[in-house]
Amino acid sequence: DAGVTQSPTHLIKTRGQHVTLRCSPISGHKSVSWYQQVLGQGPQFIFQYYEKEERGRGNFPDRFSARQFPNYSSELNVNALLLGDSALYLCASSRRGASTDTQYFGPGTRLTVL
Amino acid sequence: QQPVQSPQAVILREGEDAVINCSSSKALYSVHWYRQKHGEAPVFLMILLKGGEQKGHDKISASFNEKKQQSSLYLTASQLSYSGTYFCGTESSSSNTGKLIFGQGTTLQVKP
Image (cartoon, rainbow over all chains, first blue to last red; front, side):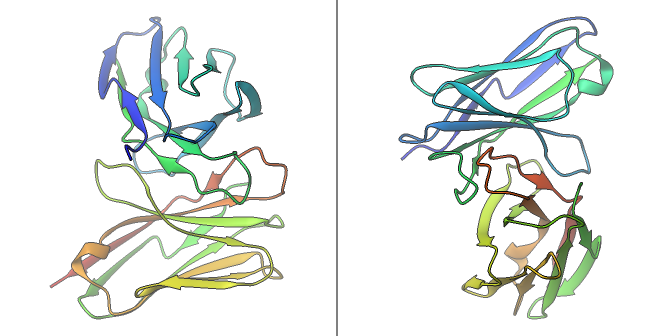
């Protein structure tokens, strides 16, 4: 079975622009979580979606938004990009998003904001 | 509250053992361990639930001390492939938000 896939792999944007990142979960998984990983640090939770509903939100500004589609794929949108948004954005999928579920990470999207 | 991992970095020779600790100031419901190699996604190692259970596969095992709010990852007879950064991700309740709070990571380097 294919693992979690993310697109694009790399992205370069300038300050003030908007970006959309995409994630396809493992087949059969209904929950997707988004994390931001700055170089040298652990992943930081942004959102979790389950069955198209937002179930959890981390401490990120309203410039960050996400949604989940009927096929369980997901998009992360970031508006008005800042230099500090440069990071690796990871998507993780799990069966139900439960505390006992394993979250499997995708390869990530490397975003550079100039 | 971000869990604290120790040590920050460790260098081993092949065949040596290592222990990585993850401590939280909050009561924990679950602890998830991952290994991440440079430029790659974190790879799941194991999950532990409150109750003080211990898990393991091959030469990697982990324990969860609910009273101390601490988990430890044990790497025995280390191999070159064990090199990478190890993260613990913690969840403080069974609220099923899938919100893992990760530590800052422990970098492990195994030398021949």
